[in-house]
Length: 142
Image (tube, rainbow, N blue to C red):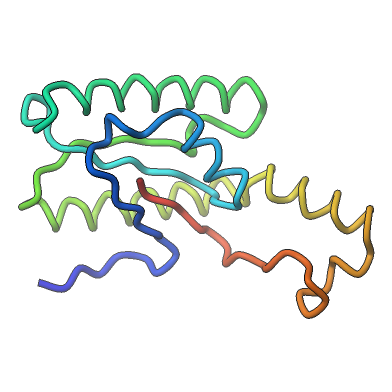
């Protein structure tokens, strides 16, 4: 079965969502993601005992931190699915994509781009070694 989810979704595979740290989530925003959606195994079905519970706590910590700094905690979500839930994965990816589009571009990316442009006017041109533009509504999945 071929999954049809938004092309802006980038999948990053990890052995267990319990290995996803708050810093990994924040780094996604620093690198230009407009949203992060963590997909773990169903609660109680983790091969590593309680990895998905650790991930849920960390996602919540990231949400709170992003709210505190003004980026918006609604840009981070977590859901628990089994490997046979491909249609649900697609539906959640679509929902996350729509949520990211409605919240607008990542303010961190916007601030970094304006700072680079102010510091070095040649950085505004991608042909001169500046930052590569990201498509609107880019979401990262962990």
